[in-house]
Length: 529
Ligand code: N01
Image (cartoon, rainbow, N blue to C red):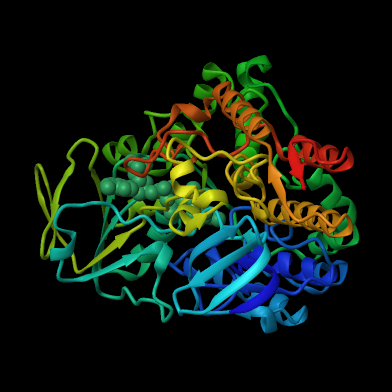
């Protein structure tokens, strides 16, 4: 049994910075990591085409001026290998590895109310005890394998985008089927199609995707950003999405038809998320949303030569942006290739996976490799799969059966001295995740420092404060169009999961300000014992 001040679970971007911050407080900290390396989601998601969808110079740590000045991002949106390389650089630069235990999955954690200690069990049999437990387990870290009848009968190779083989996979001359057209599918499809003999895409829900227009970052742009990095990071912290892109907040409905077309075209040409975030009414007015959506559909119709395929690719059953927007490179263009076919499995559902492919109601499809781009048990999956027991043995999984509740998305009633980074009820996946991680890490570190200085033995969220926070998160989301799609934001992609909108929609800046005010006023909503 190893005794530590703090155990952090997960060595992704949240866990690494948490370790660095706790060391600065002089606390003995160990990070326990399931994988054999750092990087979290970027360690596992190695499928072809995986890259970030927030610009790399923004999607990177801001806590060290030296780090952000010395690191060179080659592309506007970095590839997975580039991001993993950066994560490894950070681990080396700040000498983090000596306090990370790799290849070790946390299986259970239990709080002892008398001792005010957490006991943490792992799959390797090693046990740890700590005063604080920080869950840096990520929002998208538990792959979801769909319950497709006959999946076990398939004789070819099955690959999941979120658990891709370390050695990669060569699709050359292979026939491939892919299920799933969310961000992972949309990023991987063009590259699989490039190499494979034939690719069949099985699409259940068409998604909205905006071009990334990715490319090398011009030297001049890089220098400008680096010269102004501090100010730009400040601007990110004061923004809705935690990014330094200009937020224009144009109201779609107040524009004339000509101005609207011009605005939509401008955002489309800029690429990425600003197509959604630039418009004040895109996520609150159905009419405004439909105009933005129809512009994207018309782009799809213009790119995809086969009109029937184009119509299948046009999303029509949910508002634009209500499922996470995808950012792509040559996605729609891929359907103009001779070696790519598209099957609408909403119209003609999959009946079963066979030994050599799959069968829908109307046809039999054969392929050698099946790629599952079917997403994650998002936001809560990584927490509920661990047996986390708080006071009196209560199980987190049970407490969250009807939906997760966490005060500020950080702390849970009955689970003292446990903190969750980017937990449900925080902006997390609606913001630039690295900045969201930094904000949480700094806030949690400050709270732990406060507890240490004041000889507190337990910090716990008040049940009423937690309830009220959860209500506010739900009410705010309810005023938007986010709740009008069966998305993973709502847990709708996991059968049996409670349908609760999990991210905080009121904006990163409003959220951070609220957290800061709570810290400044003696942590109302927490019991400090
Ligand atoms: O997963 P998803 P993802 N039968 O849940 C389909 C982040 N990310 O891995 O919509 C048939 O979005 C499902 O269909 P439907 C990003 O936040 C970021 O792509 O349920 N189809 C859907 O098409 C993203 O949002 C990047 O009808 C089934 C797909 O599988 C999040 O991760 C890159 C099915 C799942 O889409 C998740 O993205 C990649 C079934 N039984 C991911 N089950 C960046 O760019 C599921 N599907 C940074």
